[in-house]
Length: 235
Image (cartoon, rainbow, N blue to C red):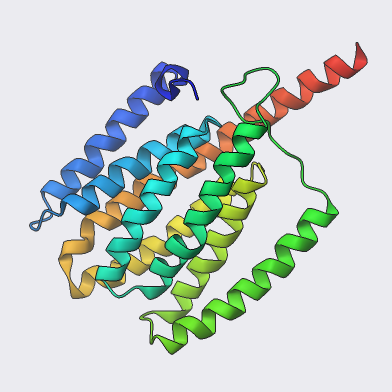
């Protein structure tokens, strides 16, 4: 639970500040400033970067972001996004806080130890993913959710991203990046009807870059952790 900002490199801090400036300006120049959208964006960008460092503060902030984004989705009648973030992403983020705190890296306790999934994990992930997808599809259809197919795809990617985060797998960030692409499409559709949501598009474009960096960062740290673990075993 150390200060996550201290763990950021100089380039990461620049990346963070530039991202905050971009989402702030996109919100202010949207023509219909919304403080809730801006707050969610700033918290989300920060959460993703802290998560890329394997710091538990990333999951704490993701929990806050899930609540704010759920409210934004509710206002736009994106029931799929609202249900996904409040009913799935939020609980799984809270559980991830627990698993990350309980599994610190032996080399750096401020970072979570990266986990290598086994066959049992994959079977559970796939079976759970299929069940969640089918269940949510009919639920969203019942609520006459706009853009049903993309909303369902968002649920699939969100589920695997949140589940892999909980399991401490490097691939969680890659699934979040795929989810970002789907959300960009969804909010482009929403912005056609109401331009006020254009800043949300900019927010998720920034999130996409952060999640791609997160995947790179986790794979890099995973290689380092595996090398150090092998060295300790040889000794």
